[in-house]
Length: 281
Image (cartoon, rainbow, N blue to C red):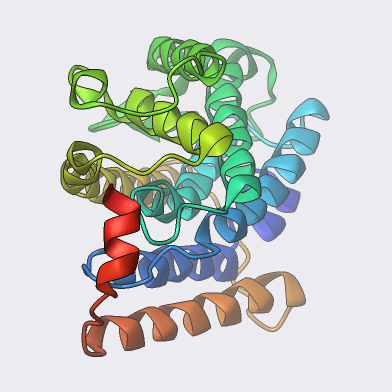
């Protein structure tokens, strides 16, 4: 059997994958509605979930208990858990007062990008293959050693880390937002709100419409990467849904997805005028 039995059971088993996909789906649905309180508590919830998996991933990677392609696909699974939280940053009704959630989300993003960088720059050469073909999905079949995508993650890690310490501006103007890519814009927004709790400018909230499309594409690409990598390397994830490690995330995923569908079909709420004026002023 190809791959690590530990990772196949704990980090990308059938229950874990389906549960995380459903959680991401359930958390994304309310975000695509306007005039709602979406995103309240989502930043710290999604951030803590991702951090717990990242801690396990880092421990297994340091002990060389999975292959390079498994390390890569697990990180893509975790990406889908944090995407809804990134989008929730732009809801002006739920951002103020969630400083701890913003800190958790920023740490999660830095850790996740750092893990991708570590994988592509170092782990692909040092981790054992565990009888895998070492092939990953990157717009097609790609040898993990030859992806060269680690350059992107190095650049993103440096950008995010640098912007995290550039908190001289406490309010984001239209001029500040123009020319920034998604990661830059998000981190500048997080840091400004974290320190001074300033309101989101209308241009920043409008920019989130573009990010919703980008994040949906990233989520779809992440799922394709995971499933194709499992198939091409002959990996055998655990399918025993009676085990707690598979059943717990699956049940949580079904519950979150049901809640997201309920929020999607419910009538749209209208915010109070006073709150809206205080937020955008």
